Length: 311
Image (cartoon, rainbow, N blue to C red; front, side, top):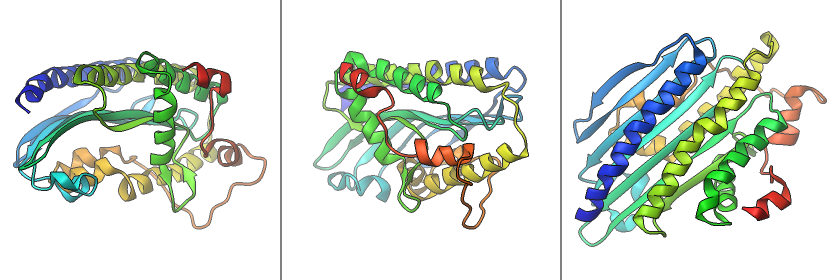
């Protein structure tokens, strides 16, 4: 584990730089609002810096959080997945972000990249995780294809089947079982990545993290000037409720953060500033709102069979 801890310094430097670059890119696009920085320390060990942008002309709220925390005993959210590490000392670091735009035609998005290591009485382990996913309210096929093509290109140097494997994993993970629908149109998700050597796993994490702005900002540019009314805003707020449901019911990162004594404000910054629920609401057939449900909220091969096989 000593060698892994030494290598983790490079991961830590990358994550801090990634937070800086993503925040700078989002501020430039918004053109008005700036990120407010909130450094914090954790009593059990470690800390981080939360950066939150509010009230922008493009982004209603965006949070980009860096954390580097450690502890003497893994919480239940982690040991449920890896019971052999019960009682292990652990260290986790990562960048996690969620962006809630103002215009309903711009999708909400989430991304994170992280590294975890643990040293127990009998077992030690390390792994990488991360990905990015897109949650549109009024989706456009060209946006979804661009999103997935960028994801595919990030995966391509690491194997022909990496994109399809991590795309499918994303579809399975970001799925609301109680609604029988995906949270959005997916992207990439991976966890427990250590089947390659450390350097290759780290290179893959960097490729995913570095691709996020390339995947998202062109969509923002295409949709930011689209006119919208109360109808679109109300539907956006209603669909944001699904985001709240997923993060509080299913998300492993939220559970781990809260159970490990993490900073609550930073963990819950992923939640939208406004959301709404309406009893038994159903979209009218043939409307743009209905199109989201019929054509987009299910796993699909967005790039087509030929592109998928090409890797």
